[in-house]
Length: 225
Length: 213
Image (cartoon, rainbow over all chains, first blue to last red; front, side, top):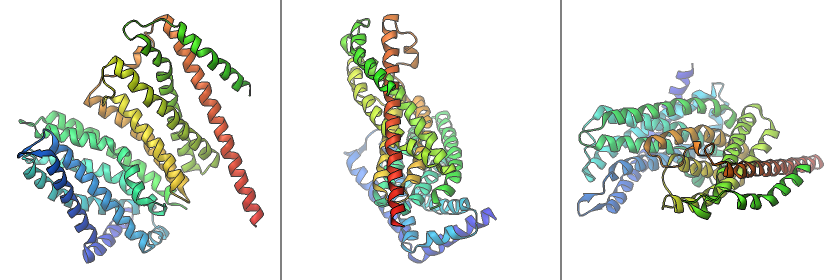
């Protein structure tokens, strides 16, 4: 029941998105422009600053993610459909999971584009350990999305929600940022510093478990008017 | 009221106490910041915990009294956080030669302070229903802070450890705990005053609504 509802919510979002592709295209274009602006700021005479690639990859993910979260829930607000969703006789937490799956798919697609882009523009050997990088990105993105979806959902009813989301979300996801950037830096060393990477991945794993659980608990009381 | 008198008297005597405390030779006059900085940090942490717990109670038990405590504690977290953030760099400039460093406790306090500010920001600008959003924020914040601590600790570290306080020479230890107690009393006073104000505000709102019916 629970996962069926979550998958239904995911399918609903997917069907709407396939028609317009609005959120997908804006997120991807935004991510590309982000990397472009940063590469102009941090690449001098063809030589990127040390460790810049790791930071820029994660900043681009975080910025694009914030944009996607805002858009995804703006759409629900516009059609007053979030209220309809919440009225459905299903567990509220399942709606949260469905929404989060949608954001995760979107961010993974964005990362598929971002990783090669950063690797090329910053001459970063991101593909030295593809499995570790994939695990790192997966754990980091889940942590970011777990907090992000809850905050974006509760801010739907708020005034000045566009500014509010980044203000609330960035301080809250600082552990994800630190772990993601530090692990990517370790990964980019030659040879890659795998013990450090796995250590950060386990910290991210703990973060994910704590914040997904917390969000599942909080979603119900926060969304009750 | 008696608490007010005691706190006022203790505050009046605090500068004397600090002036008479042992002189720390390597740091000179700047070391006196310790008497404000560290206790403010303790009070800030306490206040953040009060805010987080009160918010959790409000969120899951719908108790409006808890919400009043939470907003009072959030404001005080921001206030004492400001003291910590201002006095810290002043001391660090003299002790470490730098104003700021990305160290576990510094980062944790800074981000905690930011979260307290964003809590107040939500309360002020988010409109109707902002109490619950702010409460969720506070609960998330209290779970977040340990993560920041751990991750920065793994990353790098420089701050004097908490073990500094027990190892203070006796001449400094007395004034230190005196100041800590004074600031704690001040915190309790401000908290009760603020909760009282919030309670009266709620009562006033209820009266308005009753008249409207």
